[in-house]
Length: 442
Image (cartoon, rainbow, N blue to C red):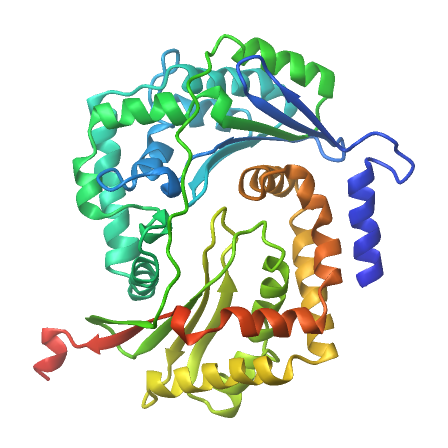
C-alpha cells in the first residue's frame, strides 16, 4: 500500500502521466503583483478557485484583533457591481458553492463550480477585491454575528476557552498570543476606518495569490484572469511582522474556573516554525503519541491506567514558531495531576529510550497517507498550494513532504523530544470545574 501511494503521488508531481515533461503547476504574476498558481486537471468537470490573502491574526495589533475574521464575513456582503447576498446566489445557481476561513497566517476564500460558471466567478472575485462594499451597515451586521460566534464557540465552550488561555499564557510578544476570532472588546470597537485601512493594505492584489485547480485550459485561464484583475492597482506592501517572542525561562501555570462536569488539562511546549527542519520529526512524534488506539498516550491514559476519556497531541504548522500541545479530558474520580504525571513519564521515556522502529514506520505511513488523501480533490490541492506558498514560503515545498517524512530517523524523533519537551518552556492550563446554581441547590 505504501509503495502504491508513493507512485500515485509521483504521478501527480509529474503531470497527467508519468512521462509528462512539463510541471504540473503553472506560475504567473500579473503586473499589479497578483500571483497565479494553476493546476490543470481534466479528470472531473469541476474547477476550484481559491484566493489566499496573506493576512491573518498574526498581522493584527492590540485594538483590532479579530479584524481578519470580520473581513471573512464582510467579503460576502456586496461590492460595487454586486449587491449583498448576490455572491452566493450566482455561484449556487450554477451548481457550485463557496466558503472561506481565517487562520493565524492567512485568510482564504474558495468556490467550486462547473466550468461554465467561470466568467461569473472571475467577475465576482475581481469586483470584491477591487471595490468591496465597506459601509457602516455591513460592518455592524457582521460585528454582531462575529461577537455571537465568539460567545458560542469560545466563551461557552470549555475546551476552546482552555486553548485560548493556553496560547495567551504561553506567548508574550508573538501575535499568536491573540485568538483568531479576536478579543470581545476589540471586536466591539473596530471602526469603519480600521476596516478601510486594512482592506487597502492587505486585500491588494500584490498581497494575494489566486490558485485554480481543475478542468480548464491554462493559457485561456491566464488570459481571463488578466482581463478581470489587471486594472486593480497594487498598494504599498504591508509592514513586516517581527517575531519578537523572547525565550521562555520557566513553567507557566494557569487555572480556568468554568462550569463543567469533569476536570481537564492542556499542556504546551514552545515549538518551531513550519519551515524549520525539526518540524517533520515533531509531526511524526505527535502521531506516535496520539494517533490511533495503539498510540502512546491512548494506550497508557485510556486503556492501561483508565484515567482519561480523551487525549490528543499536535504540533502547530505556522509561519513563526508555534506550540506542541497536549490535551487530556479526565474520567470521573481522576485528577489532572495524574494525567500530567503520565504524559511527562511518556515524554521522559522517549527522551531516554527513543521510539521503536515499528512506531516510527507506522507514524510515517499514517502521515504520508493523510497527506496524499488531501491531494485527491481540486479543493484539497488548491488549499495545499496556497498553504505552502504562504506558510512555508514556496508552494514547491509541498512536493518534498513525502521525502521529508520518509527521511526522519528514530534518532531525529528522540532528539526533538529532548530539545523541545523542556519544563522551562512549558505552559499548563488546568480546568477547575464549577457547578451551576441549579446543581448546587440539589
